[in-house]
Length: 73
Image: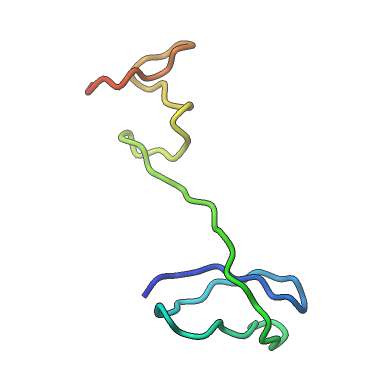
C-alpha cells in the first residue's frame, strides 16, 4: 500500500495516509472534512555514500567545483 500525502480543503492542513489505488480520497483526520486532494511530496534519495542530497551536491569522490563526474570510486 503506498503512502500518499493529502491536503485538506477545509483546514488547509496536510496529512499522510496509506491508500490502495482506486480507493476514495480519505477524510481529513484533523477536522473531518471530506474535500481533500493528493499533493506531490518531496522525494529524498540516498547517495552512494549513504548521505542524502541532490546530484549537484556530490563531491565525496571529486572535491572541487566540478563535483562528481560519474566515477566508480
